[in-house]
Structures are given as structure tokens and as C-alpha cells.
Image (cartoon, rainbow, N blue to C red; front, side, top):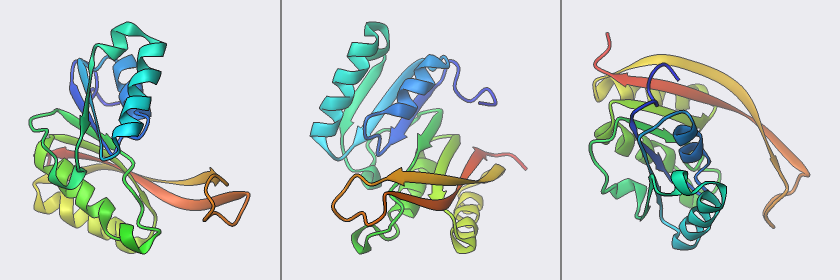
Length: 169
């Protein structure tokens, strides 16, 4: 993780069950912040984390808050998989999450649904906030049928991940 995790304060915006937080702590993060709008999902995440390891559970702060008005400041690294905007009510949320991340951290790792326009938007926002793009990679993600709105057994789509660092040229 390019030295961006070990000893760091890591924030996972829109954490859901907090997989990235757990991974960060296992990689040596000092503290993890799980932020999600859904209090029930945060309670579930806390229960899962505590069942895995008491020492991990004691190093996580759980916050019920909106990522778009993020109350956490001064973290080292944000790691997130923001909502992709597949539904009309989610359109643009990933860019709102990205703006929040760029305001509070010196390093950002983020995953977005791939379009050329989305890549351009992420890069432009990063540069405007004084960040350099360290890496962009393409991948294919698969989501099994989990919700009543899903129509396929497995939905596959292209995504990209980006690593951003403040102040690099």
C-alpha cells in the first residue's frame, strides 16, 4: 500500500461492513474510522469486527454520519468504494464522496464505475485539490443477485481504482 497504511489514521467513507477498515488495521493502521449513514450497518460492522478480534475492535471508531458532510478531519488516508450512481438518487454521490475525501486526507484510494468521463472527473477534482494521480487501474467487478432490483444472476461491469496523493508533482 505504498506506505500509506502502516501507522496511519485511516477513514473509510460509506464503510458498510468495514472491510477496508479491517484490511487497513491488519496492514498496520494505527486507527480506523468507519463512517456510514446507516446506524444498523455500523452496529453490524462493530459486531463483526469485535467477533474477529478484540484488539481490532478497540482500534475502530464508528460514526453515523453523512459522507458528504464528513465530520472527521486530519486523517492520513481515505479508502472508499463510494456509491456508483446506478440509481437516479445516487447520481454524482461518488464525486461528493471524493470531494469529502480530498478535503480531509493526504492520500485517497477510491473505486469508481468506469467511464472515460468518470476518470476525467476524478483526475480534474484531484488536481484542483492539490493532489497528484499516483495510479489508475482498470478492473472488472462482479455483483451477485442480492436485491430485488437485480435482474441478472451476476452483474459484471468495468470499474477503475485510483490512488491520489496530496502535493506530489
